[in-house]
Length: 126
Image (cartoon, rainbow, N blue to C red):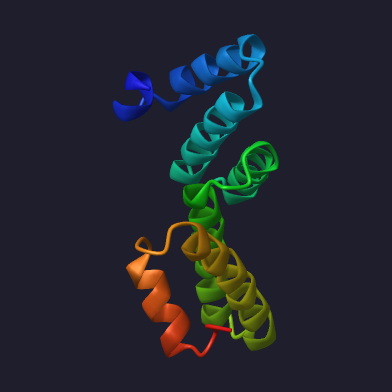
């Protein structure tokens, strides 16, 4: 984790890949996968990040931070779609973000206050 904290993402990825090779517990593997997703998010590789966050959720469905990060990526893509005058696509992406935020909030109701406010303001609470 120290390599990741210092911004040494290539080294951190190698460490996480090695940890995946050695770790057999699905719960522990979920956090390794989540951390790999964080690195890809930091590098702007959102497609790869989504893949790793989803793999983490397959092993640990009660991981609100992965759900939140997926929602953030979909929201970001929705904002990009608006900038490119792709209103229908933005709506789909925002709806997808809402799905993941609602699940994250269901698991951790006192977290993700900004997401809760966004859901209310946009009428996506139900």
